[in-house]
Image (tube, rainbow, N blue to C red; front, side):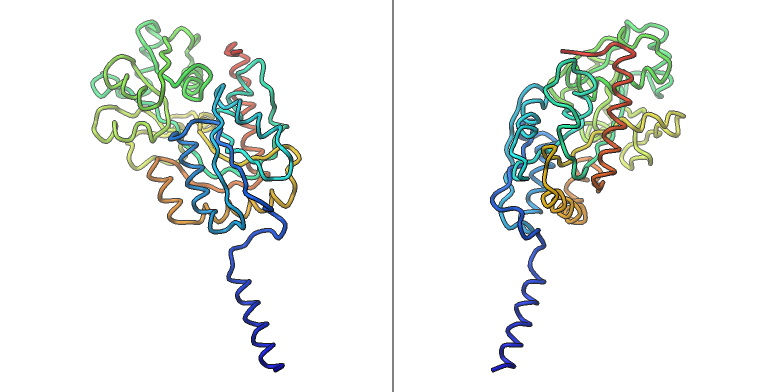
Length: 326
């Protein structure tokens, strides 16, 4: 009988070891992952891809909920004000957590209202012009702006977005005295913005690489630079470091997980472990890579430093050029 008990006990230990890892006291019930943007967008797709992986490793479901409004503000506020028990967290994004704080004069939250547990996705910015524009390099584009800024236009996904700020920051880095003199044409999305340049309705666009990949592959758009540290295989374009402007590497989209400021340690630790699992999952990595993203894992300290630095760079530019919006 004692031998049978020992065998059963050993079997129980092995079974427990084989189970997915999660904190004993977290989660206690389903977790809500708030996406502050609409369904089908890059943040939504990345978040749903993440929860698909994590569903195998959590004791309770992780449910994606889209709370849309005010360029990411509505969903972000809902998490900042949520119960600090770890069961409501946010898919924080560059727009909601560095662009908004840097550009909006009135914002119902600050970075200190959140506890960041990790960044898991980066999106490089690529600038491109029409294949038949006669512009072959970023220097030629900047020379055209300097000679006649009124003849040049750029597109973005709206005022106060990364795409607008990226275009302005790049022009500023290349010595354009008044980037605001260049005509800005807001569009409804990155794909529509790229189409406007291809159609000849705008001179250039600076947007996520995923929005431009098919246009570049079809030789409809010509990439002029990328903000990646290394050249992108599908884009025959120099990096900003190669062009002598490594400071522009800060121009990158990102997605991370954050909770209210008082997010309990057990939840923060568990989310950190989950992000390590997801960013090591080959299927997850392959899926986001096909979307044009770079899968990374930044721990809480790295995430906080990365986000704070990007915010400070953007804020300096916004203040200096008076780009603030209501």
